[in-house]
Image (cartoon, rainbow, N blue to C red; front, side, top):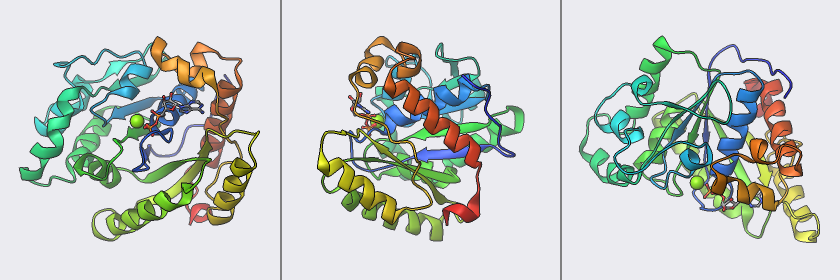
Length: 271
Ligand code: ADP
Ligand code: MG
């Protein structure tokens, strides 16, 4: 991989879309690996009790493994909980286990319940460097996702190239605006990535045009195709980038990461 430019300040990016199965986790782990392979320091925070991001990055996360739960509920420093991913040097992961499912309920009765991740990441960044922090959310708009939206500066929305793709997105945009107004002024929708593109269907091309019309500045030029290699990689505890580096899926995620790195955090562009 080519060396990539590091941003002036840590870019905290939440990968969000309340729909499940749209490629959030796949996007988070592959972009994280690509940026780390480009020489950058990257942290992935797994906020989904399913722990799919942890799995895909080759991280142990059986029940009892300390991780996101301990950071959010017990105040354990993130630096004491992260594990190095074998996928790339400079890539570390705050793992999630099934125990995190309880956090959604337990957080309700804690103080500053929506800013626990913000606080934990701030403390982490006082002593540790990171160029990128990716927050991988569960497919719901509960307190775990809210913590991510409050902690992040940027939102990346993966959009699946299929029917009704934009419908769920408008609901998400409403939530973003609500969070922006009440809890996090800095939050901006910086990036839209089209995923699971099937070049054989006319529908996919239509959705792509629609999304580009709607999110002209934010949509990356690179589109991620539907690819068997991408879906196989997690069962080997890998990203597609190390699993099949020559595959079209790997090449596209590397390109998408490069676009993101080159754009920097350019605020004007994404408004
Ligand atoms: P989410 O995190 O939004 O629930 P995932 O990233 O877990 O979505 O993706 C859902 C499923 O689709 C997974 O089985 C994943 O391996 C598969 N998948 C994701 N992106 C692609 C792609 N570009 N081509 C083929 N399968 C994909
Ligand atoms: Mg997921």
